[in-house]
Length: 218
Image (cartoon, rainbow, N blue to C red; front, side):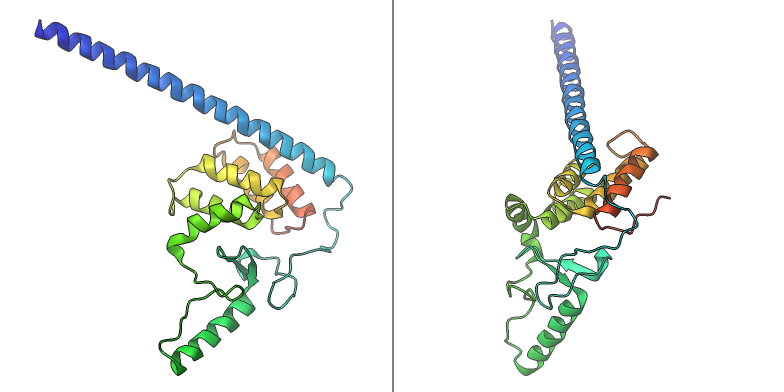
């Protein structure tokens, strides 16, 4: 009798595991189909929008630093995204602010430091995910880009290349040029989507036409 129960239990667990696995595979396929549909629509729309743009034409419009009002550098690493106010601040203004804070620390050790150069809110790295989610509700492209990086590395959230790609798609849908580059890298590497150098090149070209020029195909 005991052996029969063990056999039944083992058989039941096996059936449950199979059902769970099938459900997971079906859900994964549905997610994949949804992503493919979004990517195809994104690519088609972007190609239509940029059809008349010369890929080698000078960049005429760039986001300005909210402090110095000078167009932000082309290189992403020369500006920082603030999760408190959702602004990109050029490294020059950020460095000047850091020096000013350092001087205040000498004059008044009790002075509150570690504030954003623009909105003067504390940086609070522990609250960055919460802040990014709020900015995403406001359709701030930089918030989706930052969240994509968090998902890609697993910093503060459960690591997921799929969620990372979804964030890049959302950023691209609301106009972030570099998001197209990052989507291209997913195709080039075969991450989440089927590897396709041709698709990667198409996304890189759109990024270049939209103003992001640092596209290098390995």
